[in-house]
Image 1 (cartoon, rainbow, N blue to C red):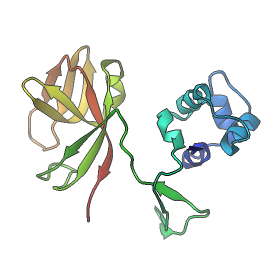
Image 2: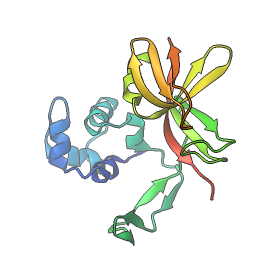
Image 3: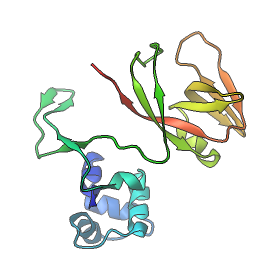
Image 4: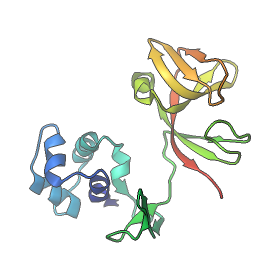
Length: 187
């Protein structure tokens, strides 16, 4: 296993000192640097503490040595496509135990036919994290509600469908909710 702490920190535009200050309790920039370089062991406690400081899932801070990656050829920004300033890689998505999939057969809203959606499953205590994100919520008899989570009102979810002009869906007492985390679109 190797850690991706430096990659995630730099992608968020943070310095070692800023990450150190965000930790609870705060630590030093030197400690964060040692964790990034492997001079200090990245224990599970550190992994959870750093994930909270960077507002990411702990699993996103580590990658298996055998994980498949592709090199980044260009970085696209407002000025166009440019070569990266340093060597970069993108990790090919790996499924996690909390993930679900949705296959789009008919284009709807921002989604095209053939898109594969990877969703992160959330328990009821974390539903509010998905407000303003596209979600999948179970309904009775094997049906689902899919769309933008507009609000969480107690045990009721208010979901706006991806197709304009359709009525808002209300889902009561959902045992789980899944938030779209990744879209894979074939050209």
